[in-house]
Image 1 (cartoon, helix red, strand yellow):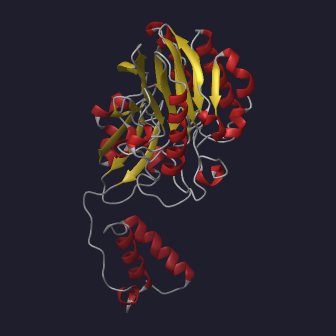
Image 2: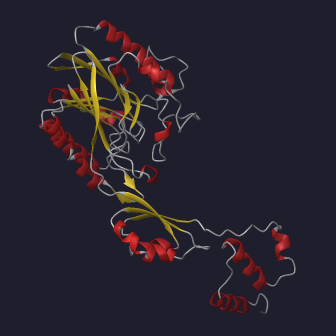
Image 3: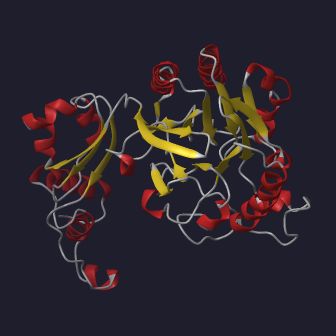
Length: 392
């Protein structure tokens, strides 16, 4: 059996206010092509299908069309819910979608129920572990009554799943677990676009950590939540997000793992790239360089994070940069020259000074040592004189 392991589609997510639906639709349209090229039988989506619990109608249509196109190839889909999803909204189709090949696992109670699919070697059991909020699943027999961590709830689910695997043991039967959680070893691939998945304070990357050995005893574990691809063990991997959702993710590949199961268990695993519709780039220089440097012309159609190094801030920096970089998404001022902060108290700084001197001093403080220009000084004098505050 050949499985395409994906996760974190985040359909409906924006990127710095830019709508990404068209881009994610283009990426999803490539999956049926991969299915036909590599003879893939099952597509796994390990959580965070949507970006919001209440997705917009346009996002629902994109997902519907993508799922329909995958099913038309003859491939099956095993999909679990993540911390961004509403498990209730996703679960409505589960009762009747399985005969069509779409297997949705969104409720904690379903985690122990295997989805049996057959290949030329025999049966493959898929176990979906949706995102488990500890406070909401304590009523289940396999969850500790005081559970407050992902380690406890995912560990409880896997203990029970291993029991089921043992009970169902038969020649050539293999098992695949699909889980949306944070597993130890994924720290290097965390991103600021990942939302914390517990309500409590946390240990690593915004979540408590599930040890790798929790997933022992499975043929393959397809993980979701971390937005970069990561091999924790040959049988334990993150595929990462379908698209880039943070400048910290710039340059990282996007795609999924092609997992081959043979008669004995796990066979070859290789990476399949999906297209990056609009790459991300960080550009640094003076403001004039950002607007005029010829080397930057090739990034006109990238999402741009512009960092200008001028000593003081520009007025309407984003508006000006968008005249060159239509997809400019973020602008930062990181001056190369930084003036030491005035250590005097405010009372000491203004003592004995005129209104004009106080305003000049204020501008120097807030503009990294750059005082008023001659034009600004003239305007300040006019305002002070008009107000009758003091003569200058």
